[in-house]
Length: 223
Image 1 (cartoon, rainbow, N blue to C red):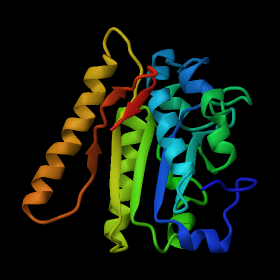
Image 2 (image 1 turned 180 degrees about the vertical axis):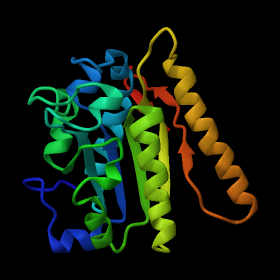
Image 3 (image 1 turned 45 degrees about the vertical axis):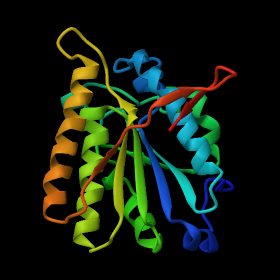
């Protein structure tokens, strides 16, 4: 559903059964800045399609979780300065329109669950059944949020399915940090844990892989 002014009304809260979370798809991680990795743009077309689907569902919302730091952020000791100016903290232009009709939360650490307002939102979404996750970086912000939100549902005894789109997450590429290998390791770990959980009848994190089809017009469609 499309939200007005980045706000969700009481009657809309009751309708939400699905939420698509997009982690750190901002200029500072994708387009420019000390931690930017332009190769992450390759997952954006897939993200756009998922966000479009969500926007057109009456029971789904899009939620963006993005870094925003002051100049003396404690996190800089580990990662160096980043996302501390008005251009770097903006959601990339290709996804901006989906953010404009969804929700956005700002975080000062790698884990979106600790951002002000996130847990409060989840508490209000009484009818939530599924959470879908996309974004970057696969092994840091995406992974930490995924595991934490799943543990939150354990803690609160809520039967909410947590899903990660394999086609919708990515990380930076460097000589000693192969983006595909790192992301695949993250996904393999999640899938391995899911298989073990299934043996016990438990419900753990699910990895969703959707293959791209090409229709007669040459447009990409995901199964």
